[in-house]
Image 1 (cartoon, rainbow, N blue to C red):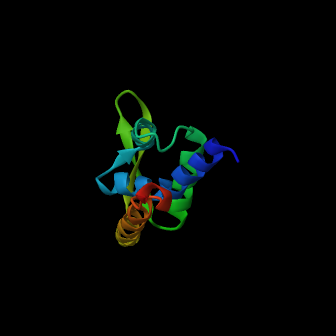
Image 2: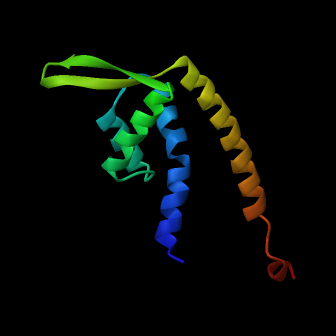
Length: 115
């Protein structure tokens, strides 16, 4: 089994949650979103972000607005929708539950180690 593939799958599993959380803080430009995800080691492939943003937009969890730029063409800024905020709250609850459950499992010492 390839450890890198498993690690990638673990990150992909929480990517949507992280993206929605970042967008929920306020308007965000895709490049800034990508930089934060990359620096947090959640995502490093740009080609993953844009299809996911499109999927979130089609699901009406995020929307975007064009903002004129003094340094070039207009920029697309993403914002969370009311529906997206409700969705994010549910994901946060799920995350807390999963985190606690995972911590419970990984904190138990092996039976061999207890002796």
